Length: 283
Image 1 (spheres, rainbow, N blue to C red):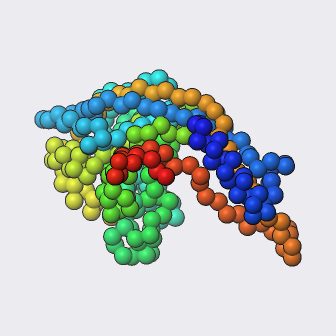
Image 2 (image 1 turned 45 degrees about the vertical axis):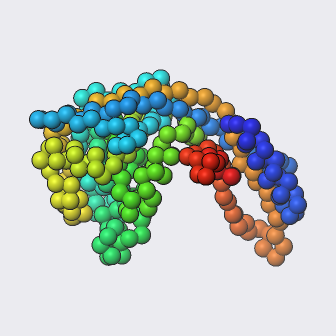
Image 3 (image 1 turned 90 degrees about the vertical axis):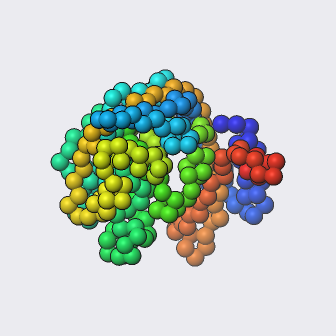
């Protein structure tokens, strides 16, 4: 969506030509990818109200939030909070973190990764090897299928595989998505992350222990429940449509010309981030 894309595409095409790759898309190296860029401006505070307390979470320090929905403004108004374990529905593991509860219009809080992480039991999910169920993308998708209005994933560095700073970098830049048919209205209105410390405050204010909830969430037969708290939060959103491009080249085979091996990588990056030694460009 910037002139940097044009430069990157031209460079890759030149390199393809140098090493003898032929155009692979009907005589062209380029394949159009219709996309939408979404830019959010979240409120500085997310307010969590419990029976006897009100917790103010600070944007960037305690939480980050975003939305795929292509609307101008998004609001969570007194949205009930449900603790849904790891937010996983996996029939092959006989696992359903949403069993027996209706989360439509509510906000779910879930742990990152799988219940098997830290158990060293490769037969329980895959132990320390994350399945797709442990990915944040899956958890957002499943919460949307369940009808939740919002979902907040609890960040912990070890099970997430990266520190809060990485989550922060990803969350605070414009997002690029494939152009949808439904303006992504089938997705949750609010997707986001909260820090472990923020989750501990929320659980403690509702008379729950973070560690105990995590252990309970790892047990078969775990049942989700409302934690007697609600969330208020809003953000503004803007979007623009454009076409990005894949760059595709092919080296025709000989003995096995009817078979294809595909190698892929991404040519994009965050572009600009926090300055290191005075340089904020991801060179």
